[in-house]
Structures are given as structure tokens and as C-alpha cells.
Length: 145
Image (tube, rainbow, N blue to C red; front, side, top):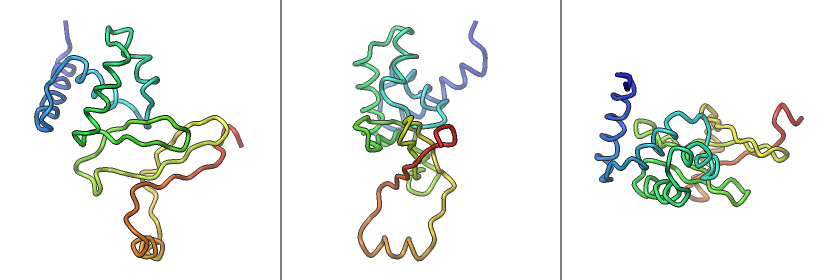
């Protein structure tokens, strides 16, 4: 028997999909719920590890990730390693919740830097160059330092 919390979560996910103009399929719901639980951007392969055993093939997962990105529900980012990473966008946050990321150059771990504030002088200088769409910080994580 499904728990009340699970049923409410599925209903909210279906409502989110409907508002974005997407059909609420089992695969799309599963992909969106997986991303809702994720703490950092994830690759198609990382998401597929969990969803393929549930009966969704890799191509379906990838297609749905791209559909969610095109609908504006998910951000699709390439962090310099030629792998697309996906994460939920936050509609209530300025710029849809876009934020900088830290990537460890040794192990590849990705960390969201949601609370990173750039100095006003930096923002002013960037605005004179163009529109910044992504900030990526590279280095060694604490484990690899």
C-alpha cells in the first residue's frame, strides 16, 4: 500500500508537469522525482542506475531529461567534462535557481555553490561584457586535497 506522503508527492509532480505543458507519464514522473531528491547535478548514467531496474530504459530516461530541460523544469549543464548534468530549476528563485558549481579536477565530484555571492564590482564588470549564464569553479575537493 502506497504511503499518503508518496501519493501526495506523485500528485505534486504530475501537477508540475501539467503546468509545464508536459504529459505525466510514469517515466517522466520517475525522472522528475529522482531529480527532486538529488542534492547535486547528476548525469544521465547516474540517474539511469536507479531507474533502469524499475523498468525504464536508458533512452527513455535520456529523452525525458531533455524534455524536462526544454520545458524549463530542469537545467542541463556541461561542466567541462563532456557529460551533461541535470538538476531541478527553482521557479521561485531569481534566474530559476541557476548557481555556480565546484568540480574536483581529480575525482570529478560536483558540488552546488548555491549561496556564493559575487562582489558587486565583479557583477558590474561582468554586466559590461555580456550576460553570464554559468559560473564554474575548479579545484581539489577536501577528499582529494
